[in-house]
Image (cartoon, rainbow, N blue to C red; front, side):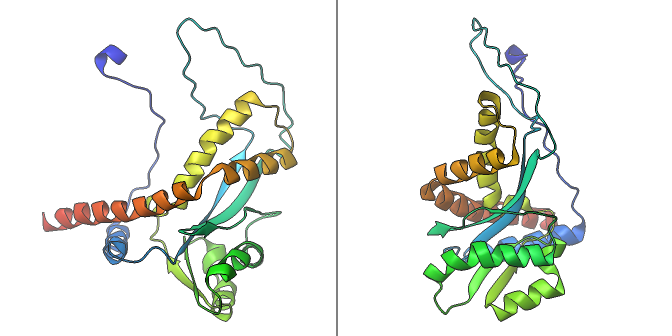
Length: 231
């Protein structure tokens, strides 16, 4: 297949955007092309699971490398985490102990966002980019953010590509897959510990590059959508 210019790539699933979605994305990208990203926290949740099936491994043709994986208990096979990144820092990983609702999200912000943001935002409003998940946009969460001087920047719907922390999650999951293949990870505490270690391996330079990259994506997306509307 390689001789025919084919290569293996993971399946990428994207949501079909409505005209309203496209307009919202266009407005967002236009606003942020020349905006200052240096004072924004970019946040999001993600899941890390033992039951990971997206691994791809390249080996030499003459190698016979077999990885034996023991049977694992899947009672506590995943963790749901939140984190935030900033040009000059990052939060600690917050691990949700139950389902994500408004109370859990507010606890997450108190424990993970407030300590590092206080270092850079003493007596100033914190600017936080987040998606439109119900726990993020409930009345209780909005009141909490207003009371604690958190200015919310709403990410357009179905637009994870405009959030730089999604790039970080992708980098971390590559490292996570490698650990799954080479280590005997079975418990929830092992999942948490390994992901905290991986989180610390991500350099601040990498975080800065991801944030800068989103500005380039906004510029590209806006130009593409503008040409589409003109046509």
